[in-house]
Structures are given as C-alpha cells and as structure tokens.
Amino acid sequence: MKKYGDDDLIAQIDGETGEEESYKAFLNKCIKLALYMKQQGIQNGDIISICSDNTMNNSAVFLASLFIGAINASTDPRFSVIEAKYLLGVVEPRMIFASEDTINLIKGAVEGENYKCKLIALYKDDTLENIPEILNQFTDKETEIYEPIFVNDTSSTACMMFSSGTTGLHKAARISHDALCADFDAIFHNSLPYIIPQMRITGYATLFSLCGVYFTLAPFFCGHIKVNIQEYKPETMWDLIDKLKVNLIYLPYSQAMDSLPHLTHSLPHLKCLGIISGQIAAIYYKEYKDKLPNTHIVYGYGMTEIGFATVQYGDCAVESSGKPVPKDVIFKIVDPDTETALDLNTVGEIRIKNKTAMCGYYKNTTIDVWDNQGFLKTGDLGYFNEKYELFIVDRIKEMFRFNGRHTIPARIERILREHHAVLHATIIGIPINDNDHHAMGIVVLRDGYSVSADELINLVNDRMDVMHQIRAGIQFLADNEIPYTVTGKIDRRKLKQMYSN
Image 1 (cartoon, rainbow, N blue to C red):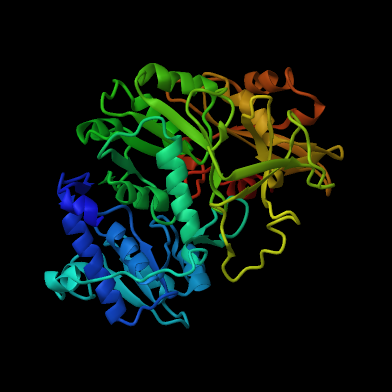
Image 2: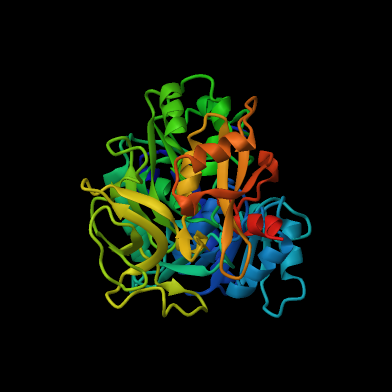
C-alpha cells in the first residue's frame, strides 16, 4: 500500500457520490484506526467485529485490525437481532463497528450479554465514539513512523468467517494468514482471465462472507480500485456499474438471476462477471454471453472452509464448475459410507486438501471435518470427467430418501431450470412417513412468463427415474417470498419449515 501511495494511485471510490480516495490517504486512515485500537487496549489475537455494507470506512477498519493482529469476525447488516446476538455471542468481540443503518441492530444484539465490548460508529454520531472524530486524534507524523505487527506464525488466525448456514447454525471458520495470501495468488495472479492495472472491482457481499473478505483485501493487495456500492437495486445496477466504469463485478447466484432481465445494453468497461454461491443454468449463461459478448463469465466451486478450489471461465463445459485452480489443491472423490476413493465419472463426496483451507471452527469441535488423510470433507456430492472438470451434484444433507433410496434434488432442479419460464427452482423432500419423502418443487417464474404445474411435473417425470419424480406437486412463489441467506443462497431449511407441515 505504501508503494501504491508513492505511485499516487486511487484505492477506492464511493459508488454513490463518486468520491475518490488515494492509496496514500487510505493507508493513513488505516494506520490511524490501528493506533486507536491499540490505544483502547486491543491486542494481537483479540476479536473485533464490523456490521456494515461496503463503505469508504469499513475496509479501513478491517485492514487496521490486521495491522495490529486483531481477528475480525463480522456480521451482516441483513441479520435479525436474534441472529446477530447468536453470532456475536459465539465470538464475543471486544469492539464492534457499526454503520448508521445497523447501529440499532447491534445495540439490540449486545444488550444483556455478559461480554464487554465497545461500540464505534463508522459515521459521524454525537452519542458514540466515531471514525471521523477518531481520525482527528492522530497526526500524520504518527502515521509516518508506524509499523504493523510482525506475524511470526503465518498459520495463525487472521480473520474468522461464518459458514453460510443453509442447513444449520452458522459456525465461525478460522482463516489463517497463509490461506488469505494463497487465495489472492490463486484468484488474481493465476485464474482470472482478464487483469488490467487499476482494475475497478465491486460487489455487494459484506465482510461477513468469504467473497466480501477476499474482494475487500484483494484490490488493496494488488493495487486495484475498490468501488463501494451499498444498496442492491437490480433495475438500475447495470447502469450504475457502466457509469462507474467497473471492470469486475461479482454477484451471488440470486442477484445474477434477478438482474439479468434488466441488462439491456453491452457494457464496454466490464471485462469480468463473477457469479458466486451457485451456478446458473446453461440457458441463462448463453443469455449473459449474448448480452455481454466481450465480458468473461466466471464462476467456480468453493466454500468458506476451503476458499476457492475451481474456476470456470469459458474453456470448460458450461454445466461444470471448471477445473482446479492452477496449484496447491488436491481433490479426491470418495464413497462417504465406505471411504473408498472413486474413479472419474463416479459421484461421491468431494474432499479437498489445499493451502486455503480453514484452521478449524472457533469454539467448535472439528474432529469430523477432516478425514484420516487430512482431506476436508466438503459435504458436497460431485464427480470429475475425463477432462478433470468438476461437476457438482448436490449437498449430502439435501438428499432425502424415497423407497429406501436417495433422491438428489439438484438432478430435478437442473431439468426445471432448463424451462424458459423458470427463474428459480428448488426441490425439497416432504415427509410422508418416518423414512420416505416425496419431492416438491418450489418455482419462481420469470416476469411475463407462465407455465402450469402439470407441464413442469411432466417435464421432469418424463425424463427422470422413479427416484426423481415430483410427487408432492409444485408451489409457485414470487421472488420476494423466497427466503435467502445473507450470502444470496436459497435457504432450503426455511423452505422446508414452510411446507413440511
């Protein structure tokens, strides 16, 4: 960051106001916040938390925490008070930074808790200590002589990120310094198909998520520009990123699907669209390519516990999740019941050994997370073909039994999503007795399209085996009726709760 400051480069831009901040000014801000945390007694290994959308200040807080060796474990602005209370109760941060939109959420989440934490406002606030006032407490001379903490053990925890929680309670995954740097190298130096100097990067993921962390740190690590956009508005998003001359945007699956109908013109500056937390159907991949002929469409396979493991940007089968990142990742596919390693084109559990894997879960046993060869058990079903392209089949936990055999929801979902009228499709198992379930489809239609439930049921049942028939019907929902996790995944657990009774 000192080097980029000496070169007088831009570090970040406010997407709403257009305000620019140079690397020199941004680094100065980070150091002053690091000095403040240290002044307040925050030490190496202490936990802090941030609850905010992407602003010009929350990135500085995150970097400042790394400068002093503090561990960041952020929550998301879209949590309820109950969810935030649970997560903060797990990590018990000594200091929490909140935006104007989340300050009441955090106050409610820490009320009545036994741990002591200091609440700091990311904005000007007359009732709380706040960043604008904190920055005035230190001189530029103090920042010039500042030296960050030296990390002797780079396998120690740099930050914590909570697993996505689609099937259960969130767990805090401990991510090491080594893992963070390895992922930067894998993504920005080896995998992305288009890298330019001072690339403008944006996305809506917060510091709560894997992508929010990596795409906050990576721009400053590589000398690019972070464009901070807060509120997701699918109707105006593409016009905004065109106006801001964004070169790379990353969107979760749900946002990529919801914003596609509003993409009405090509974007000359957009070189790369990354789709995370899910894979779009081939029909929509083609629609994106037709609308953005000069933009690389990138997605892959990864999870909080392992980082990014595969990348796909056009040289692989569209239905695949791409090939393993260029180095330092080892896959195996095993029968989860027998632990037997399986051959190509055979579905089994995906297990991974790589440098970007987590150290373990905070305050949570990890005895069953790794197998006896040191491979992390992902809980995902998949297979490799002869070209070593990875195909994801489903989560092991999402499967349900019918007539004593497994039904794999993703196989049915894939066929439903091929229909031109279907925007989202999710299959859940409705219990009919203690051991058996019937498949039910939850479908969101594209605006202006219609299709009957019988047509979709016949589409599936005519093509699938007896284990993958839709027997519990199809429910049509509006997109705003679908429950999503804060990382943009459809919340299957809540869907099951809605219909299992």
